[in-house]
Image 1 (cartoon, rainbow, N blue to C red):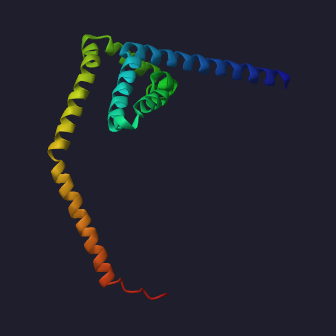
Image 2: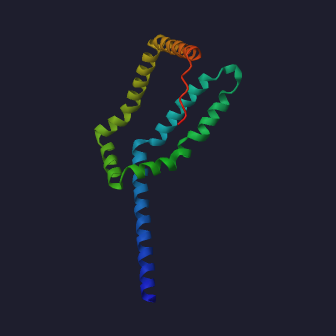
Image 3: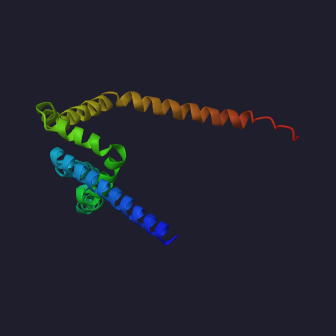
Length: 168
């Protein structure tokens, strides 16, 4: 009996340390991928852009731009997000897949993807913005039409209330 318990404990400790070693290796693979992708810089640049957009939405005379900037950086910097993002990558990809992605990013096509993706993202954002601005009169008209229809539905319900349904 004592021998069975000792074997069980030894097996449990061995499997536990093997799993921990596997997770540590998996985490290290994710960290290597992030280094290859320069993830810290990418996230912090995105945070800078977000902060700028949000600060522009705050009137300068209100005096809160520094507050908005500090708030965004407090909750969205790479240092704050790092562990959660590592965990998300570990859940989404096996260690082998992470290593394959890292290998790809070490190729010329992978390096080009890393450098071109932010530029393509900016171009897409600019295109989306142009389309929204160009078609904003249509949105305004659609909103006015929806308000008009809602108003007439309300008037119709006041004039013609729904019939009471008989109780069972």
